[in-house]
Length: 287
Image (cartoon, rainbow, N blue to C red; front, side, top):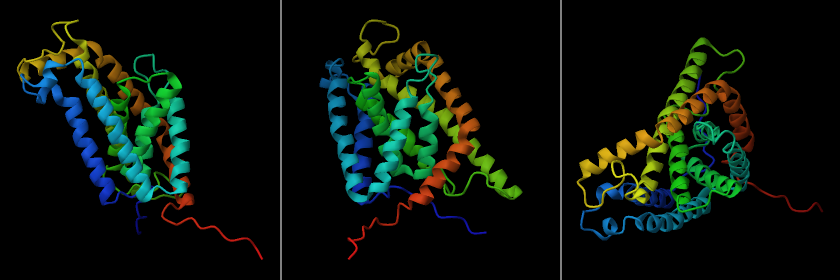
């Protein structure tokens, strides 16, 4: 039996890949500069100001990536799908967000990135986080870091191995197909668990330098060796966000396993009907 081709709502061209690679590289520096900057650098000397500098730079770069991708391949049907999923994700995020890190938005990002591909996933993750910040009043210097992190999170699901276009479970499916379906679901749940922890850890890097001397044992120490700051950062993560990240990871796993089959079927059905790779044409007026 032939396998359906993998459908991508957004196909990344050379310019889009170059813009995405540049933004990701700058993003890595923006997150990891406390471990990369020499002790006598200006960034280390202005530890309280550096995150603001990188936040402003990331805003511009994320905008460039979104514009480049949309210019190359984001058609009207993909825009409509993007709007629906981003609005849904933004509405899901506030549900339970104040309780033990329960954030239902993450499981939707995993499934959407899986079905619609890495290009769509990066745009969806960034737009969803931006819309959520506007909805909840969470706009601040941390927002560009959240947008980039969520873009990576959703894009990663689209890069997972296997044909995303294969239905998870269909009527009359063979035993082999059902096993493959369960395997895919477990893969997505495992990715969601690990990526939820990674998201929390990366976001800790964005706020950690702001801590200053408020907590000397876990705060960033300008001019200290990398090993010292790394140990402080690990202690900071354990003390401040381990429980929250665990709640987010478990919530993502539970929702992926419980709702994944239905959501994946709905997304794949919508993707097939949308026929993203078919150009939209308009007939002229009848004569």
